[in-house]
Each structure stands twice: as C-alpha cells, then as structure tokens.
Amino acid sequence: MIEPPSMVINTVLSVMAYNYPPEKLSVYLSDDGGSDLTFYAMVEASRFTKIWLPFCNKFKVEPRSPEAYFRTAAEPLEDPAMAKEWSSIKTSYEDMKKRIETTTERGQISEELRKEHKGFSEWNSVSSRRDHQTILQILINGKDPKAVDIEGQPLPTLVYLAREKRPQYRHNFKAGAMNALIRVSSRISNAPIILNVDCDMYSNNSASARDAMCFFMDEENGHEIGFVQFPQAFENITKNDVYGSSLNVIMEVEIPGFDGHGGPLYIGTGCFHRRDTLCGQKYSKEYKADLKGGNDRKVEESASVLEETCKVLASCTYENNTQWGKEMGLKYDCAVEDVLTGLAIHCRGWRSIYFNPERKGFLGVAPTTLLQALVQLKRWSEGDFQIFASRYCPFVHGYRKTSLKHQLTYCIYLLWAPTCLPTLYYVVVPSLCLLRGISLFPEISNPWILPFAFVISVHRAYCLGDFLWWGGTFQGWWNDQRMWLFKRTSSFFFGFFDNILKLLGFTKSAFVVTAKVADDDVSQRYEEELMEFGASSPMFTIIATLALLNAFCLVGGMKRVIMQEDVQNLLSNPFALQILLCGLLVIINLPVYQGLFLRKDNGRMPTSITQRSIMFALLACALALY
Ligand SMILES: O=c1ccn([C@@H]2O[C@H](COP(=O)(O)OP(=O)(O)O[C@H]3O[C@H](CO)[C@@H](O)[C@H](O)[C@H]3O)[C@@H](O)[C@H]2O)c(=O)[nH]1
Ligand SMILES: [Mn+2]
Image (cartoon, rainbow, N blue to C red; front, side, top):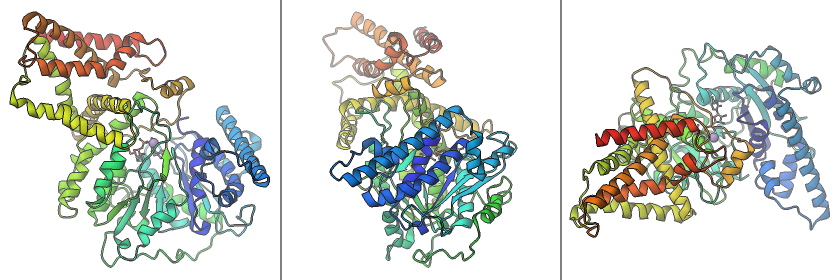
C-alpha cells in the first residue's frame, strides 16, 4: 500500500535500461513486503523490458522510467514510422500499468495469472509478510542465450528476492535487506560495483552507470575511491516547497563541501559502491580490483539451480555468528544505516566522490504531508545523533583515520538532534519572560546587541541568499524557515529523547517507512501548498502549543509594555528584541493558527490537538504569571 508495485517497477525498468553492456548489468529487487502483487508487477516488467530496452536505445529516451518518460515526453509527430512505434509502446505501457493497478486494487492474484509463472506457487506457504520462507526468482537470466529482447539483443539479469522473515528473528530493516541482496548477488552475478536505489527513486540519466565507472577506473586515483554518491533530488517539489523537502542547499552547498575533506557521506540511495568496500575491505595502496575483466565465476548453472542454492544466503539464520551488519555489509542497529556505513568506509581509508551533474542522476518523491516529513526527519536526526553518542562518534572512531575537518563536517548532521534544546529555549523562554515582564536581551541602542543582530539579520540574509541562489523562491525560504522551527521543536526533540531512552536501554531503533502515495485530497492540498495537519500526533501537539503560547505571550506582553512604557522610545525599550522575536514566531506560525481555528477541510488540525494545545499553552502562561 505505501510502496505501490507500479512505482517499484518503474525504478526497476529505469535501471535495467541503463546505457551499459547488458551482460554486465544485473538488477535485484528486494521486496521486504514479501508481496505477490509486487512479484506479479515484476513478472509484467520482465516482459515489458523486451520492448522497452530496444525502444530506449533506438530513440535515446530520457528518462528511462516509462512513467516519467510518457508523462513529460511529447509525441514525435514528424516521423510517421517513429510516431507509430512510440504510441504502440505507450499503449503497451499503459495497458501493463492498468493490469498491475487493477490487480493491486483487487489485492490478490487470480488463478489465471498464477498459472503464468511458477514463482507464484511460493506464496502457497506464505502466512504473512512477517513470516515466510525466502522467495528467490530469477525472472531474466542474462546468461541464458534465449533471454533476448525483440531485436535479439541480450537482456540484463533480473532477480526478485523476498528474504526470509520470521517473527523471532530481527530483520534489521533496510540494512538487513541490502545485506541479503549483497550475498545473493555475489553468487548470481558478483559484479564488482553495486548501485543502490530506493524504490521511490528512478534513474533519470541513462549515462550514470558509465559516469560512475569513470571514477572507479581512473588510472591515477580510482583505486582510492570507495563509493560515488549522487545527490537526492525530487520530482514532486511544489513551487514554494511547503515542507522544505527539496534539500537544495544541502545537496548543492553542504555536501559538495564534504568533497574537499574526504568525500560525501553515503545517503542511502543513488550510490555506487565497490562490492569489496561494502564487504569490509580496508583501503591499501596495493588494492587493485579487476574492473575490466568479466566476472571470474565460470560456473554456469541454470536459473532453477541458482535459485535453490542461493536461498540459504537470504535466510534468517545465515548471519548468526558472522560479521554481517558489523564489519560486513551495511551496519545494523542504526536508524541511518547509510550514514553510519559510509562513515565506517571512510574510517577504513577510502574516499568518496560526490557526483552532481546538471542532469540529475536520480529523481524521487519527497514526503507530501507535514507528518511524514517530520517522521522522516525524526528518523534521520535520531540516527545521526545515535552515531555521535556511540563508539562510532567521528572524533573517536575516526581519530587518525579521517582528517579532523572530515570529522567536523560529519557533525553538521550528527548534531542536528540536540539543536532542539536551544531552539526550544528561544521559542519558549523569551516569550514567557515577555509576558511576565522580565527583560532578557540588551536594548537596541546597546552595543551588546550585535551578536543578536548578526543572528537575526546577517545570518538569515546569508541563508536567504543561498536559498535563492539554488533556485528557491522567497516564499520557499520563508516556508523553509518555518520547517526548521517545526523540525527542531518536534522531530529533533523526539529524536533526541528517543536516543537518550535508547542509551538507557528502554527502546530499540526502528525504521518507519515513508509513505510514497497519498489520497487524492491530500495530494491536492499538497499541490495547493496547504499545510497538512489532518492526523493526530504528539509532534503536532508540540507545534500547536508553541504557536499558541507565543500568540498569548505577544498579546499579553504588548499590553504590558504599552501600558507601562513610553512607547515612543523603542531604542531603549528593554523588551524590543523579545517583542520582535515573539512577533516573528507568531508570523511564521500563521498556518498553524489557520489549521487550528480557520480551516474546514480534512487537513485542519484535529480537534483533540486543538483542545490539548490550548490547555497546555494557557497552563504555561499561567505558570509564568504566577
Ligand atoms: O524494513 C525496511 C525499511 C525500508 N526499506 C527500503 O528502504 C528504502 C528507503 O525507505 P524510505 O521509507 O523511502 O525512507 P526515506 O526516509 O525516504 O529514506 C532515506 O533515509 C534512509 C535512512 O534513514 C536511507 O536509507 C534512504 O536511502 C533515504 O532515502 C525503501 O526503498 C524501502 O523499501 C526496506 O527495504 N526494508
Ligand atoms: Mn524514500
């Protein structure tokens, strides 16, 4: 439901169609949902490759996700022969999509479809998605001479894997899934370079694989490179980006900054790794990988034999008493397995490359509701801070292994979570003090105002400049500022405290999967850039309470100042900065007040949250006045 099969196969098709020798390309899909609906979509996709790949090559199609391509491409009307082929492929794609979507809606595979592929019988013994055997199906075996497209060209290998899941075994989320893929692929194709793409992204550039290989094969420095990371870019960002999810400043300013210090962090998707590096190999000057030769496996087994022999590699018990999840593969027990794994790779002496060509290598979907965005940010800030507070802290684990500059660079993100503390302080204390009549900051005429003036104006102006430079709008920057406030006071706050609970042993990390689709009316509000509050979450209680608290304090504080002071004399008014801060907070929170009191649609704040937050805010004000 949250990762629809029709989306997943577009990811798969886009990478199968890479401009790359098909005999050297193998695509593996990990289905952690263990769904026969996804498997069905994969069977359909494996057939569609036979027309899609030749079509892509012939017409130099970009991007090679059929959905994305047909959504944007204009029909080539000049050449009638081409136009005919074009529309016939388009129709085939749409028919396939329709079949997949109707099957998905129905929720089960009909008897007729089940007959089409032997793989469906695996689901006879599946009791639930959390309890099933390994399902491994080689849908296209590239080594089979019969695996060719309609023009007789060989096809890349395509494999479906749902690793074994049992309730009594921890599956370790995405990291566990990736490690199972690494092992299974080592047996089937064993390519020396591995690309990892999330199912909510597709390849937007068919040259990316070749481009990445150029770095690894560079004769002078290639052997130092552990991974090549592409930026995360999104195709569903609206003009003013209400949830600040474009990550433009991070991707265009901050991560390029890593590049000079040892390389970017691994951000989980759109990343080409050396298989050896991922499996724990340390860098050494002598390291030489054979990237030019074919792979060394001479054994040519049939697909069904491979399926049988590889199953054990994806079983629950395979990793018992091994280094998997520790020194091998992606690391476990961290909400951001990617950043931690990348850090470990840097500490093993490898450097990484950030590759950000003009035509984005990968495009994905960003969260489309406030809650999803905040939950995702909670996972990131929680995992990042967990790394900082563990033995993998860059200053400890990276000591003498990476440069101090690199360690400090990592900390920009690793220390996101604790920034909730100063932010909460600045959002609550000055406003309550204003209400109570305690002055905290210097008057405007006082020279000590400078540090505050710097933060309020110069630093904001600088960050506005960055934002506009990288294609944002002024309104988008304003929305981004609001999101920073929200994420620091809710996501980072929960991320921070969950970490403390984890350190004390009360909870364990989990990976809350981000939903990739939304209801029609939610999507419509997203397009209209209307904030979506319509869910009950403690995060919203905090956001609404803080917004109301500031509104109350502003009214109460202004009243006090106007009654007591000579309003004319703003420069020497000891409350000027507090009023400014509180006023800014009220203005930036306007959408919250709308959500609380004015909106009537389903995206408004739930009544229970409204009541709760009014109560909390009044209580805080009463305590301050008491
Ligand atoms: O138990 C799990 C959970 C997730 N996934 C897959 O992991 C990918 C990322 O999950 P998603 O819910 O989309 O998370 P995001 O918040 O969008 O992921 C970002 O943050 C993660 C770390 O928190 C990184 O791993 C991702 O690459 C990065 O895009 C998806 O393909 C999921 O199917 C699994 O295979 N098994
Ligand atoms: Mn995602």
